[in-house]
Image (cartoon, rainbow, N blue to C red):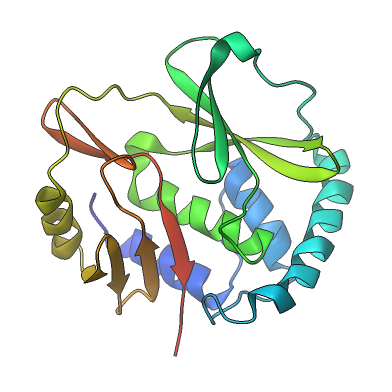
Amino acid sequence: MFIDDDTRKKLENIVKGIVLEREEDNCTAARNLLCASFRTSTTVKKDFEGQSRIKKEQAEFLRHHSLQNNWWVNALPGENSFLTRGGEAKIYYAPDRRSVIKVNDAVYYATWLEFFNSIVIHNLLFEDTAYSFLGFIEIDNSLLAVLKQPFIASDAPVNLKDVKELLAFNGFTNTKRNDYFNKDLGLILEDMHDENVIVNSNTLFFIDTVFYTVSE
């Protein structure tokens, strides 16, 4: 994890709700599409119910544009590939067994724009576990994002002190328990417990992050 000037500028633009130019990956494309039509929220976890109307509007917006961008996933991996379920995602082994498929309902986010902001921020900061956006699938009238991520096997327990030190080195202050805040970047990072960060070959890998953008 290293935040260079280029990354810092991109993060600033995400917080300000500015479209990221010259980025071709599907995660950024989906985020830019939403960003061009909806305002980025800067009030974290306030008026969550009021935001639900906007989230529904964004879901319809994404359904429409997904047809144009070929962002529909026809089928998920079989139940024999099912790995686990987290707070917001069902996780499957990908056919290559080197990646996982995460089917995410964005329940932790007030809007779909918040969700894709978080995904793009994760990809900027944690390239080793970057997400690829495969598209959407609709189950029981609910829109779900289908993401692919490298599979990292754990070979040692996580020391949360090491997580805290790494994040502190990059400007994130521990606010409570496993939650962090970077005032300079305007980012909140939550829920960095030992299931969302794993160790392999003495290296920390952040596999599940929840970012929120804030600004004064």
